[in-house]
Image (cartoon, rainbow over all chains, first blue to last red; front, side):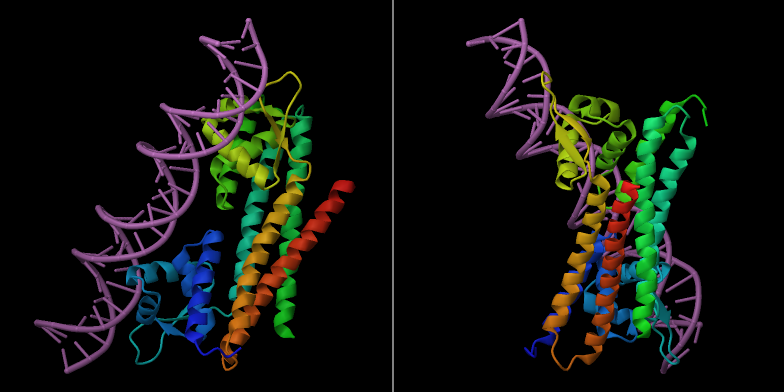
Length: 156
Length: 156
DNA sequence: CATTTCGTTCAATATATTCTGAACATTCTG
DNA sequence: CAGAATGTTCAGAATATATTGAACGAAATG
């Protein structure tokens, strides 16, 4: 589909992904930044990010720190270049999956903790919390399967 | 573990789940309300929810509406009783999984939409967005597996 | 039928989050 | 070494979200 205005497609993608990120508990500008890196590929300079996304350099600094912490973005430098450059981390999507799995595991642990503290006579709560635990186990297993399948997909 | 203060265990569980809900893009009080229903089992009166959770009735109204919309809670009435009662929906955990899957599908659609709009010469972006799409497909499949497995678990 | 109970809605408040500009330390440049 | 460029931090502004009290309509009560 060669409509000509490919810049618009890029901008739309970046904005959409900003909203998706927001729906997944991540600041919108971090999502936009990540989307930009995915779309453009390669390493983008710190200053260029601020300019293209029209956000302050402070915001770039915070966003890239967040994305680095989550293993989604990698900071690289170049000989002769003073600025920091950023690119999508090699295993970014796997990291995204791993982060989801970790959140589920944390929730699972909370339920398990309560189950352990439950007095013996609380049969009803015990039964219901066990089902709750099963829910988190199911979702955790599903994510693990997704992780392995995604790994396979890349190789093929 | 019969420590005696089982009320404390219940309160802790409710508060913990409030935080878990918050981490999953749901208002804290909705999470607490749901946790209370899971823990106690059976149907709880509107007024009792406000009192036990120490929140306003307006907040109960908003929370139960949200939880009803997501299929997590069911409103029931009782002959002779004027208040509404609320209980965990029969398939609440399945609904929770379905909601996750729907969110993933929505994100997937956004990426797919961009892929469709991409100009032919944009080979690089096409390649990278395809990988992105694969990520959402993997997570979607994982959730579907979780859904079917969770169904199985209940039957056994 | 006046009064109470019940649940919802709405505007305002409270709270949490995100973003920014300014100040800063560090490193490079000429 | 003076000045510019770079990235970070922090306090405050801007924004978004959640919670509340008050007003309201509907339904039951006595």
